Image 1 (tube, rainbow, N blue to C red):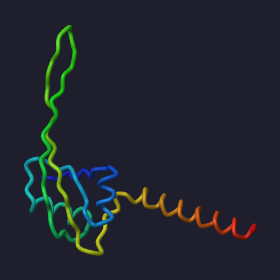
Image 2 (image 1 turned 135 degrees about the vertical axis):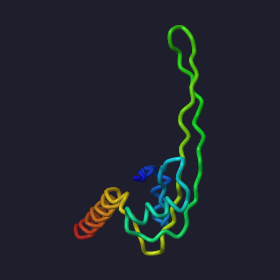
Image 3 (image 1 turned 60 degrees about the vertical axis):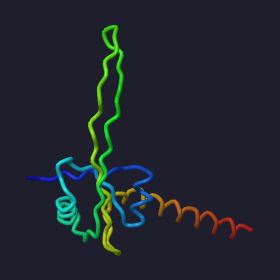
Image 4 (image 1 turned 90 degrees about the vertical axis):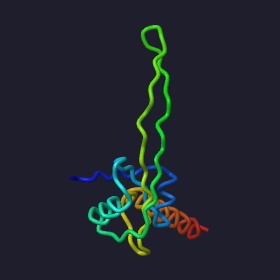
Length: 117
């Protein structure tokens, strides 16, 4: 059985990843031990804790064929995985690299302005 770990990509999860907490969407049948084992095998890190939340699917209405039809989105199980201090998963690597390049560009711009004066 292969376990699919889908990282959640949002500003909130990015802020948490800087503190060592990573958020994944997981299958509803998995328990904390299975999630921790899958993260350790996939990313070769040490997992300290796993917290699990089940977000209930929203009710939606759709107007179709001159009447309203109702439905419910699927429930989503989220796993908040805390890693051992010093371990990191490169989920947001592209964003972090872009931030570093922007900081370097700012430093160069400030340095060139000082030299002009």
